[in-house]
Length: 167
Image (cartoon, rainbow, N blue to C red; front, side):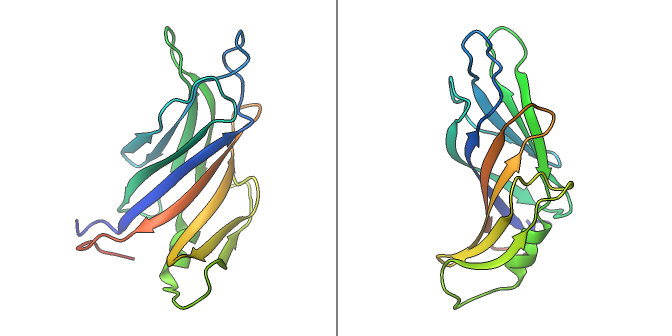
């Protein structure tokens, strides 16, 4: 426990305009895999959708905040290997910096920080880190790489663990 900083809850909200991998049906059966270090988590499969809504929380244990979070989207196939539908990665450094501000008493909805899209972060648009309802959250729209199209909408939230190293 003492080697952990805390937990990062990644809410996989939805996919937007994902690639078609089931050509005959003109759709896909997507799911998301999130990896960080040796951890690997995945969402459920959403059948027949290029605009799936998961609204699923996946929780990573954070020991090394310098590791990137890797995202892979796949199309579930029954009789063959699952098809790749793109990948992305992002750093959690800016989110952790905003958490370390230890803000209190600011109005809900206050923007603490903004992360601009760059070649390094896969962001499709500016990502705001916001203080809302006593929590610091980061909303992000991630553009998938190595695929013709597709984006994922995610939200990051921190969970402190009693007995952990903390931030």
